[in-house]
Amino acid sequence: MKRIPVAGPWITEKEIGYVTDAVTNAWYGNANIYNERFEKAFADYIGVRFAITLPSCTSAIHLSLLAMGTGPGDEVIVPDITWIASAAPVTYVEATPVFADIDPLTWCLSASSFEECISPRTKAVIPVDLYGNMPEMEAIRDIAKRHGISIIEDAAEAIGSHYNGMMAGSFGDTGVFSFHGSKTLTTGEGGMLVTDREDIYQRSLTLRDHGRKPGDKMFFNTEVAYKYKMSSMQAALGLAQLERVEELISQKRRIFDMYKSRLADLSEITLNYEAPNTRNTYWMVTAILDEKSGIKKEMLMELMSDMNIDCRPFFHPLSSIPAYKNSEQSRIAQKCNRISYRISPYGINLPSGLRLQEEDVEYVCKSLKSILYKNMTKG
Ligand SMILES: Cc1ncc(COP(=O)(O)O)c(C=O)c1O
Image (cartoon, rainbow, N blue to C red):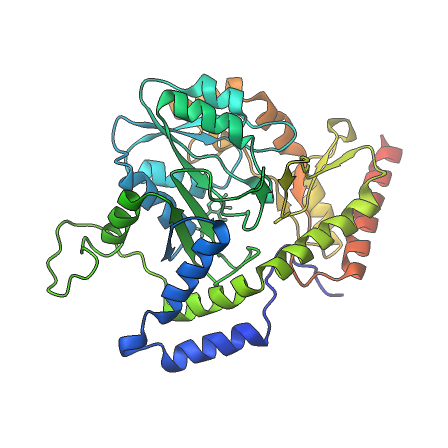
């Protein structure tokens, strides 16, 4: 029996055509044409002035922090529930990540917890558009503005999501995206930094090219910096995917609806939330089991795996994982972040790949229901 993968892209002849053209023609004087087209089309789609193609979203967060002048002694607030890449670049620049709690409905950064975490050392906040959902951006922006805190919006998982009519990635001083192979829009590996701020744009262009000012032909590096570039083959793939982005998002929403119609009647499961002022693009359909079910995510993933279904765990609180758990900030978070610690043990991401078929969803839901039923009758 085939395994059902947890994530995966949707590639068509269009993508193959663009990449073939790039590998054939995007060299010499044309080396940059696909990067330029992808950046321009992406900035237009998000509704911002500037976009920079990068090798990853992690590098986009790193550049954002550097361009804002974040360094030793600074604190950066990050939601406790996210992939480690949201926080790791804070450590790269020798600043301190501070872990705030999440909202029980959206699973994104809680505005009130963000405010409680602010100290005189807070330099920036990184709200994360988790699994394609949006945090309470109005409240977060108000708080950040009042305290003079910069915003890096981590929209790695949320291409095309909206909040109050504005696109994910357009709320902060910078917005950052991932095009990893598991994402809705992929370039294999890749990322994008978007901003309306000319100063951040120019600084990021220099920092990502070994400290060369744009246009430098004489190899006069002005400082020691980084090499963060996306290849033209990846940019070609990204451009083709972007031209299909609404089709990709519709498919993600269709997959969510297929799950919802089959699982909505189960009172022991909560699926992703979508607020009325929001478009959730459901990067990962996520099920949180009721604590009373007594089934934790590790066990559920194992049982699903026995049925040839690959799932992923809901992110563990960053303050609980070995990389961070002994820091002073983690000890505070372990005590304060009640929602993160309550939800995380019971959540899994269900198969959400773009090529998932209706019969796959049917099988996953049946399997999940049979696990729940067996456990209930045992209890
Ligand atoms: C929320 C979040 N932030 C950042 C990243 C990092 O993206 P990348 O792997 O492109 O560096 C990811 C990737 O999975 C992510 O999910």
